[in-house]
Amino acid sequence: MIRFGIIGAGRIAHTFAQAIAATSGKIHAVASRDINRAKSFQKAYGIERAYDSYQALYKDSAVDIVYVATPHGLHEAQMQEALTYQKALLTEKAFTLNAAQARGILERANAQNVFVMEAMWTRFLPVIQAVQDVLETGTIGPLKELHATFSFAGDLNKAGRLVNPHLGGGALLDVGIYPLTVADLFGTLDGTITSDVKQTDTGVDGWNQIHIHTPDSKMVLESGILEDKPRHATLIGTQGRIEIPAFWSAQEAFVYTHEGTLITHINTPHVVNGFEYEIQAVIDDLEAGRIENTIMPHATTLRLLDVMDQLRQSWGVRYPSEKV
Ligand SMILES: NC(=O)c1ccc[n+]([C@@H]2O[C@H](COP(=O)([O-])OP(=O)(O)OC[C@H]3O[C@@H](n4cnc5c(N)ncnc54)[C@H](OP(=O)(O)O)[C@@H]3O)[C@@H](O)[C@H]2O)c1
Image (cartoon, rainbow, N blue to C red):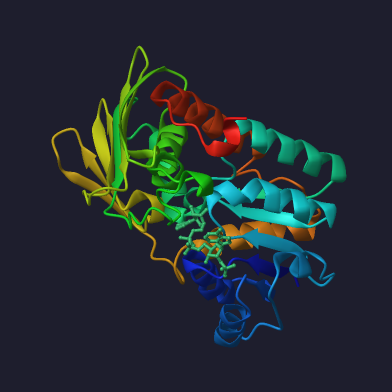
């Protein structure tokens, strides 16, 4: 049985721990900077070991793979350290602050023959795969427009991970990665890109809107941490459209004709919370001895980070560790 170790007992670590029950794996250990938080997490999920340091978890030979559930700005250093202990890695999005950091990690992991994947769970959801099938069968015709918005009213406490540049704050890395993922999945990132941004007073992007134009299509992607907006994706083809409510965690999608008649309601409720699909895929890879996942390969992580680098550069948003 594949045994996970979690570093960082925050919000998403709980989501992960709830989903593991629907997979064939288990959580062997959790590490927190605060031993009391580690122990209460351990108790809540019946975990064997609780550590007060991440390094102690890397040293535990019973941990097959580390789930990195910490803020973006810390991922690279944590993954580098875990790799010194030959640990496989499942790392929350955004994988690293930029593509250069990601290339360093992925090259090292490949050289060590170690599995690494960015935890972009959306790509593993059955409804996303069903929408891909609908597009491939031509039901709505070639895609001509795509709209995806993920904006919410976040915690703007300056020390918090959402706006703190030292932790890799900003809407793009936190939630903008989802509209970009939808564009990459169903359209393309390979077009002319223009964008608008609103910066926070901490110097990260609080809101952004990205336009990607190709000769045949246009995509409008919006993300923000400043205000709540309808979080929705719409794919418009020449013959119809697909609506995907809450697209990053989608459980359903609606396929319409050009005239607006519902053709198909794709309905695939999560078994737990939707994380179970990516976790099981990672377990299958590890059991088969693979070092890369085919649904979320390394090239996809790099492709999105390259675009995010380009966008941040055009906005003048640089993280402190990039300024040396
Ligand atoms: N897939 C998704 O749907 C989804 C949703 C939300 C977030 N995420 C991703 O998950 C990661 C964590 O997000 P989250 O919402 O879980 O954040 P969070 O609730 O703030 O938890 C992050 C954890 O990281 C640890 N940490 C270590 N050093 C830290 C530092 N200097 N400052 C703050 N925290 C530190 C802390 O755990 P200890 O103190 O216990 O060590 C903290 O609880 C991010 O990459 C985020 O983008 C993914």
